[in-house]
Amino acid sequence: MEEKGNKFISITLVILLGVFFQVLFVFGDMRDTPGKAVTEFAEAYFCFDDAVMTARLCEESRTADETDVVGQYVFNAHENAGALGFRLFFTEYRLSHVETYADVENHETARVRLVAEKKQRLLRSFFTHSPSEKIEEIFTVVKEDGKWKVCGNPFSIQEG
Image 1 (cartoon, rainbow, N blue to C red):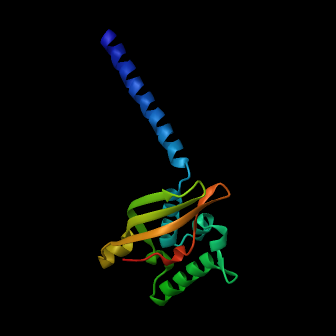
Image 2 (cartoon, one colour):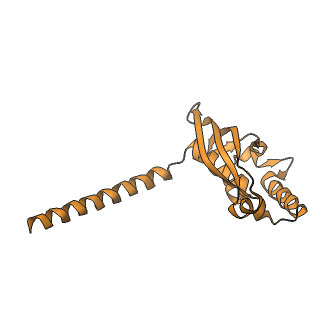
């Protein structure tokens, strides 16, 4: 009977430790970092997610000559996809093997190097058998309104 009690205590302890570490990891993932800002921006860039791109862009990079650069980028991507006979969804890419290397200059500015593989969405890559492409880019990131945001000209991400 005592062996059954020890098993119960051991299993309960393992479950409680698992829950504790899960909560710890969730809170750790919620912390905003320069690398997280760049990763979110790059993923949104290749998926044409204008809301996330706008949220992760610093104020000075959102407009150029009074033009909404995010809106213009998504519009151009939509037009290019239509010219190829695709919907915008089929021209999206996803990032994998994402690595970021941050050089925080002070508590307000950082330079982040992003290295990742860019792959076409699963449905399109199934039919075209296109290989993944490596991307590597350096971003300038600033802390604005308490969040890290991408600045400069992030719409020039080099491909391939």
